Structures are given as structure tokens and as C-alpha cells.
Image (cartoon, rainbow over all chains, first blue to last red; front, side, top):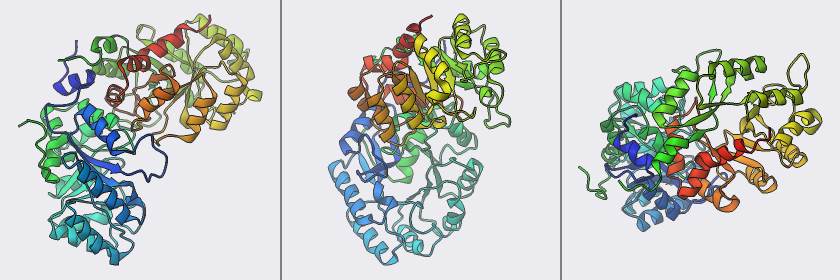
Length: 268
Length: 260
């Protein structure tokens, strides 16, 4: 009979992970989706988090792929106020409209948001001069940035890793393509981290990054409610890696990078 | 540890309905995608049984590949073969009804097909004999969502209302309008809960609206981490009864109801 680790035993029993902090570093909020979802309410997110033992859900509004940054940030601010211990929000900006960027980011900072999400789906590329306003703001305020990436965007970001040393860059969907390039930049730059969510749940991808010596630089994310966190967490729980590395990937690394101080679980 | 779910029952009976074995022409994965690797994965994840398809059917003569599959799994009772079928059957007779009789005589109770790979349309005028025989014997037919025109699927299910179709590889793109319409229109349509079909709150929502009898479970082999399929099911918020239905009861029932 095969021996399972404590994470796997919890999963097989359908019980929440309670032996370490679990932080979902990549999610979305709001009902403004490009295709209909079964549920988008904060309550459905919290219910899913409770089933799995997720302590904190770090999310940006779906409107990150639009030019409705203010409306999107309002959704995030409301959710954080409703669930201050459970929801951590990334602020967003309309990067195609440079005059709007700084006022909106300052408004969000004053409202208590402490990280930024950027998305290349709409608006200019990450190397566009408009983005320098956002990078300078994040750098001055020591705010981490979660960047949607799909391989190509790394070349637009790479010189920013050097220029803006106060920013921890979290590369979303790490390994969706060109996993070697993601591993390279995570090894080369101390302020670059990898976030895991990827819809095919590719077998072996988590193990690949861990075997590259990157277990301190991987943050687990789900893309909930675009996808289900229930599936994405299984990629780490059942990965062929040590329990110590699972503790880091599922929450410890995100606690450090995103400066999350949750004390929800009594774990060391 | 309090048991919310009967672990032993899952260990004993969990059935993966979607594994595809067979080495691609060029190495796509960093691991072999053969029977040995599949059984290792099943053991690692405590999956009791798997319905196995030979992926090589898509790229070469499918009936030769069915034969290879039967040979390769002959000593493993936990692997349940699914034969690839085409509407023209197998030479030299090219009689698909006879082929399906042969399949049943070989104790094979489930089939799969891929119209896109074999250059035919899943349409009654093209597949009448095959669909008729499958319906007559209540043989479940596995079809990948990626290989099918949804309108074609609707039309054949309307023409063959007792035909049992199991849709695999469903997308994670939320509450899919076409899939919802198919579920409403065709009671014999079954969906596979798998890593690709990773929809927030989706399984619970579907079970509450369509009952617990229309879902089977898949591990996404070889592409996906099968553990994602396990957590996707056990953490879904479904009741124990609903989880067991998707995990094994529905598939066991579908196989047992095949008319010999």
C-alpha cells in the first residue's frame, strides 16, 4: 500500500489543508466576465476556500482586461472591506490612458490595496512607456506586481526586473509555454517569482520548477473564478515533491512576497 | 482523522474514464505515455480502474491499434478497453454492426470515435448503422469535445435518443451555452468531470440541476496531473453520494447496462 503525505491524506478525505498557510496568489473577482460563469460571488469564493483550507485569496477584478479600472478596483475594495482577513486585492490601472494611471493607483493605495495586477490582453505591451508610470509607483511604494504572462511578455519585462528592484514581479501562468525561460529568469533575478495557475494542469510542471531549485520562488495560484481552485490545488498536493516544498508553494512564499500577515491558522 | 468521504470506497472503485495511451510520433511529454506509466499513475493516485483508449487510433489504422491495446492490457483486469469505431467498420467486410458484435464478444463494453481525425461527419446519413448498433446495445460512446461539431452531436442525439454519449475534454470556460443546451435536450448525454473541465462551482451547480446520474470522472491522462482531477472532485462541494456517483457508480452502471 502506498504511503501518502499529510496533504494527500487531507485531500483524499475531502478535508481542508490545515497544516500550513494556504494563499491563492492569483484569482479574480466580480461578475463582469467574458463568458458566463456558474458563480462569481465572494460567498462562493469563501465557501470554496473553506473546503480546501485556503486562508487568503489574492485577486484582481475581471475588469483588468478592460478600460474600467476604477469600477474594477471598486469591486476589489468592497470585497476586501467585507472579508479583510480572507481577500487581498491587486489594484489595476487603465494603462492605455497615461493620465489616469497615477490617480487611480493612489486612490487604491489609500483604500488599503497593497499590490498591482497587470494584464497584456488589452492595452499596450508591458514595455510601453505608459507602464513606466505604474512601475515607478510600485517601485516607490514597494508594491509587488502580478503580471499575466504567456511566454512572450517576459522579453517586455526583463529589463524592468533590473530597473525596478523594489518590485517583486510575479509571473502568472508560469510554464504555460517556454518553461525553461521562466526558470531562467526566476533563477537570474532575485525579485522574480513564478505563479502556477494553468488550465491544462500539466503533469510534471510543478516538479520541473522545484527540480530547478526554485521552491522558494513558486507561488500557488488558481485563477478562480475563471477556473476552479479545487483542481489547481491538486497540482501541488499530488506533485512528487517534499512536504516542506508544498508548504512553501502553497503559502509561505506568498506570505513573504505579498507581505500577508494573516494569522488565521495556528501554524509555525 | 474524521472521514468526510469514504476513502476506502474511492480507493476500491474510482474509475478514470479518459486515459489515452500510446506514444506520439514525436516526444511531446517528458514521460512515456504507455500502459506501464498509466498503471504507475493509477497506483500513485489510488485509481482503481481506467477505461483505456489507444491514442494511436487517431494517427493510423484504428482497428490494428485496437488489437494492440487488447494485447497490451490483456493481463491487467483493472484496465477496461474502449474500441475506436468508424462508421465504415473494419475490412474486409466493412460491416460496422458485425464489428460491434465482435467487440461485445471480446467483452468490450465501451467505444470511442473521433470524426475530425478520421475525416467523416457525425451525421445520421453518414453513421446510421454505427449509431443504430450502439444505441441498440446501449454501448456508451466516448467523444472528445475537441473533436466534435456540437450541432452534429445535437442532431445525432435527436435521431438516436437512447444513444449514450460521454463527452470528454470539456473546456473550463464557465457555463458553456452549448453544453447547457445539449444537457437540457438529451437525457442520455453524460459529461466527464476532469482537470480540463475545471469550472468554479460548476459540478455542484450541474448536479443540482440535472441530477447526479450524468457525470463520470477523468484524470486527464496523459496531459494533466491526475491529482488535480481528484481534488477537483473531492473539494467540489458535492455530497458524498454525488461524489461517489461521478467517481464510479455512474460508469459502473453504464457498463453493466450494455445489452449483449
